[in-house]
Every structure is written in structure tokens, then in C-alpha cells.
Image 1 (cartoon, rainbow, N blue to C red):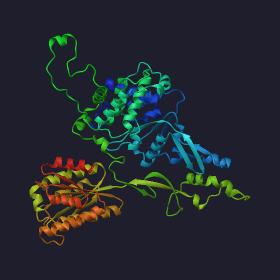
Image 2 (image 1 turned 45 degrees about the vertical axis):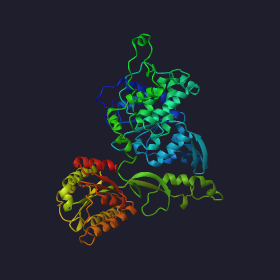
Image 3 (image 1 turned 90 degrees about the horizontal axis):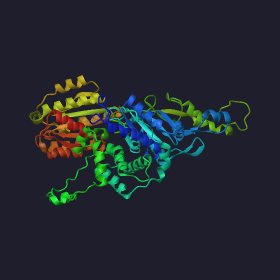
Length: 584
């Protein structure tokens, strides 16, 4: 059982015997072919359910199989390998050290808190998984080491946090661990491994898995290939020399169903007259029916049966589950390099000044290969020669804060139509930003000018107070509102923050930039004020709150490079939900 829309196991629900059987099967299949299946993503926090699945997986592995556990903070020198500093200094010559990926060759690598892996680390692990080897060319060492392993990514993320796509796409199984009843006996993994390369695949199975992947809306080319590997492993585990229908069905449940983005449509056969009695007595199947459904239909039925109810509703409406729409870094903004704080992001060569932090081990690692040459012809003096080009400095990166700049049309036309709903929607969105720890700002425009009601702040109370005090009435100085939004966005970027503009207006501009009335000049000024936002690539969303969508509002959205969202009939709750989905 899973919680709707989340994919996590529900600890309050009784274990589903079918799902529990599939999770036990996933552990066994991964033990049979860890490198071929890529691995598994375990979604859920620490607990007995996750530990139980990991223990079962490890129990399946033959004795002596490598099992390495790695944090996301491991440096590249430990991940990929490099110079063994202590051995190099002792021997006086470069001595190579194997990295974690090479140490996991032939076994399993467990990546803790995988949702926090930096994009660079995820790309390096994915590259090694594709190549099956680590190509080491650094610190005066050139080696190629085998590294074929299965990855178990422990995903402890909340809300939008997810394992990076390059890793998730290469893992066959996406599981939410649940309590697993004890299995009566463990299968013979060694025999299944020996039989793996001899299993035949009928052409019908290939077509059925590819067709099922297409019917489920899966856009990854790896998914049907991983499903095929799972079906082969299932056949080998069952002692068969050829993939059977039940092997393909299990592969579809385990590999294809978690990746589904739409519900497959079940074909309904045309209604026909019942057969005559003598035909039925003879045991003849009615016309239009077959005694056995096509293999692709059986595979789709198997995948459809395990789709969680919460996801099923979203897929039935043609929507992706919210978990699949989040980026790897969530919605906390972009990342920027910082000199002294944040997450470690490797090292760089540079001069030791301006308070930079020395990476001592990396500095010694860079200097070690040159020691025999630097000591040549010298007598006495220091035992270690470090030059300026050896200096390595620590690098850090920290997420940029996101500033949601709400620009609200408080003119007379907007007040008459939708100002109350707009205020309610903005208040709900402000609360959403507060939960994500984003900063918020509020700009109102009415009469002849725009006013910054609230500079960027993390205080929800101040934001609500400023919004409640926003009066309505007067003209619509849209150009002034856009100018104020642009100035605030530029200031946010200078402060190292990521701006997002949400403009709520009915699009009836009638006050020019100089404060004079007149719709033609006001519209011209508004378009001129919108264009710099597009050139500056400021992400923006324009919500047209007029009772009828306005063509000019759409023109303004195009000029500022914003997404246009017409909402002629919506209350505050629906308006805020639409804005949140569009900005996701």
C-alpha cells in the first residue's frame, strides 16, 4: 500500500501480499543481475521497512560479494580513486588508490541520502554505470578499473526532493519499502546467475514490453530494456531457459508501472449476438473472443493492477504525479559558488589569499608526484617541496534564495472584477512560499503609480498585513507595475537571489508611464516595460483575472516572456492552485 500521490509505504496499512511478494522478488532479481538491472531507488525514510529490504537483498548475495555504503559528501578522490597520499609519500613515487566505485565492482553500492547528491556526482556515477569501468586520469596516474555494480539509492526526500534523473533512470526498480513477511526459503542465486546468459527471449515478449511501455506513456528508452533484463532474471531465477508470460508480467509490475505517466486504455470488444446453443454446447469459443488474451494486454493488466490509487486518479486525468515533476534541487533556487560556506563542492587551484580555505590533503596530493624530481640534486632542506601551483582551495556552493515577487493590479476595473479573489489567492501562495522558505515581495499598482508594499521578506505576518492594506480603485498603470517589478528583480539578482514574478492583472492598461490617461499610449508603454524582463530572462507568470480573457494581456505575457494563464472563472483556492501548478 502507498499513500496517495507520494509513493511511500503507509505504515498504518496492512501489507499487501502481492506487493510484498514483488518487493521480495525485486531483491532477488537485483542479486541475480545487479549491473544489468542498474539498481533500485528506495523511497522512504530510515526505518525497519527499509532496513529489512536491504538485509534481504544482502542475504541473497553470494558470500564475498562487495557491499559498499557511501555518503553523498564523498570527494571525487574517494569516489573515482586517485593518489594514495600516505603510500606515495612513504614510497617516494605515485601510488594509486581505488575509489568506492571500483571497490563495488561485481556487487552493490548503497548511496545514502541520494536525493541530495550534487548533479556532478550523479553524472559521474551514471557515466561509470554506463561504461562499466572507471577511467582514472589524474594526479599523474592513468588507469582503467572495472566497476560493474548495482546502485541502491536511498531517497529520503520530502515533497519535491527526488533522486537525480540520471540515476533514477538507470535503476530498474523504484520501491517504497514495506514490512516483508519472512520468506520460506531463499532462492538459488548462484544457479540463476549461471543460467542468466542462456535464457532465450521470444520475439513476442520484446514487442509486448515495448508496446506496454508506450501505452503507459514512458518516454525513457531504458525502461523497456530494464524490463527485459528483469524478465530474463526472473526466468533464470525460476529455472527456465526461456522468458515466460509470468516473467514479463512481473517485470512490467516492477519496472514499468512506477514509471507510468498515463493510464493505458483498455480496449472494449464490440458487442455481438450470443452464439447459438449448439455452438456453446460444442465448447466453441464465441466469435470475437479468444481463450488467451494477447501477451501485451496481460502485461498492461499486470502493470495497471499495482498502480497506487492516488497516482491512478492523476494518470486517469492525463497528469503526471507531482513527485515526478519536481527538479532534483527542488524549488529552492539555483546554486551559486560561495567562498566560505555551504556544501563542499570539491577544490580548485588558486592563491591562498582573501580568507580562502586551504584544502591541505588535496594540496599534498598535487605536490606528491613531483617530489622525486624536486628533491633531485638537493641535499638537506625540507623533505616535502610545495610550490604555488600545488595550492588547492576548498570550494563551496549554497542554494540561492528564491524571491516570489507578486505584482497585483489594484485598479478600479480589477477591484470591480477580481481583486478579492486575487488577494485570497496571493495570501494562499504567500503561505506556500513560506513553507518552502522562499522570500516574498509585494508590489501594488493603481491610480498613476506603482508602490512597493513589501520588500523581500521571509515574514508571512508582514506579507499578509501588507496585502490586507492594499486598497482598490483608480486607473491601471501597468507599465509602472512592470517597471517596479523589473527593478526589484534586478536587485534580487545582485543580492544572489533568484527572482520569480507573478503578475495578476485584468490587462486593461489605461495610464501611461508619465501618469497621463489614454489606452493607446498606456498599452505601448506596458509592452515597452515588459520587453526588458524577457531580455533579462526573469521567470514570470501572468495571470489574466478578467471575466473574459484579454488579448492585450496575452500580448504583454509574450513581450515579457511569461507564461500566460487565463482564469476567467475561479475562486481564490482554484486560482492559487493553478498558479502553483503553472509555476512548478
